[in-house]
Length: 361
Ligand SMILES: Nc1ncnc2c1ncn2[C@@H]1O[C@H](COP(=O)(O)OP(=O)(O)OP(=O)(O)O)[C@@H](O)[C@H]1O
Ligand SMILES: [Mg+2]
Image 1 (cartoon, rainbow, N blue to C red):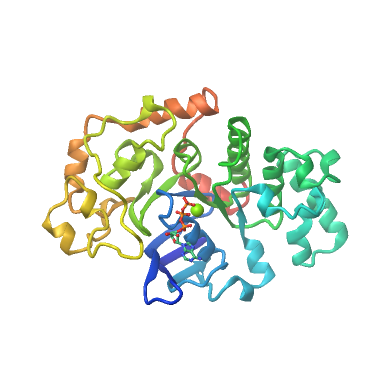
Image 2: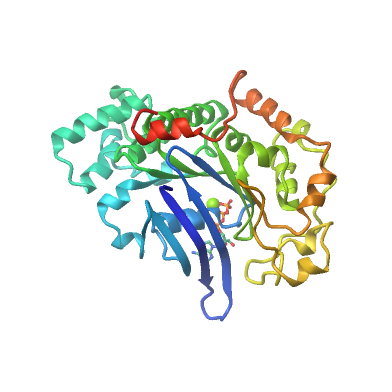
């Protein structure tokens, strides 16, 4: 069973003094299994953080359902029990912003346990274990966040997210404030923790190399709608939606060497989420758009049992870019950034998942 199911999630923010709304999330569905990483990718403003905040109960969705292990989660975070909050945790982008500057390292790691009213002696033991797990020396316990590096601060962030033994962790740009070495270390740490504990990650990032390295599956968001979802290796190698092609070959990639030679180039600017196109949101920018794309939202189509694309012309996208296998390109870039010999990830096998189920991962 999935640990997390998000079904037709909608989040519209009213704009004060007007009837208009910011349509940040527009019918997003996905599932997340134990031990699995689903990456949410998309340009700035595509709704990634908003989805994460809904999952954590930090904001109340306009519509849609979020379930944890088959049970619907109602309402906002304030009505979630401390136990439930412990099951779904988060790691933010800016460790310095998410860590209370007046608390010492051991107190920061301990915070979620205090909320759970865990007895003091157990807490001390767990704090030491969590610190060991993320590679934080006990000599740092009395330091304040400002006294340690950003990389160490983010380790504190990870330790405190993991200390309540969560099933799901939302990682919202957890590495973007870090230098390349600290970034690689945190990604590797997250992978190790997941292998050991079977934690599921919702991984939000602009850093496509990190996404390729850590994620099993990837969901591509455009204006609050998932336009493509599938195994990471497949989507990177052969994206089926024109927007995914553009995103994965775009200037967002730091190294021009790995920008793809794709023939699909988008025109114009991203529309405003206040005034969305009536059918396919990409139609006005897409070189393959036909009349139907402007009339009717393309349905979520399974182009393979595990691969969804929301585009009437997905077969043509696949044909056009037949020659460009983007996987090798990414493998090379991942190795360049994270060190040679790293493996990019395939979906966890059934055997691994079954093992994780019994705590043997
Ligand atoms: N509280 C809010 N009130 C009004 N609009 C909001 C609010 N929060 C987010 N938005 C809008 O919702 C849209 C999605 O924002 P969100 O922060 O989820 O995007 P994102 O994909 O996380 O972007 P980034 O990559 O820059 O972090 C944006 O247009 C944003 O301006
Ligand atoms: Mg964001």
